[in-house]
Image (cartoon, rainbow, N blue to C red; front, side):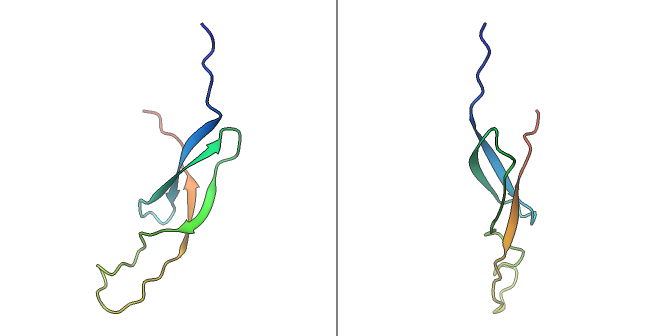
Length: 72
């Protein structure tokens, strides 16, 4: 049998380091280094549901890092 060929592009999950559970799914070449991005996290620690007073909702950029694939 011939060797199985690996894909050149892999799909990775970038998880929010603010521990909100939000993630982005992106594609990258297999040979490049793991990804890390600064993006806005739509699920912030402050939301209008928890604080009905007239507080201004502060959105901050959060670091998103690539997670390793877990073996099952």
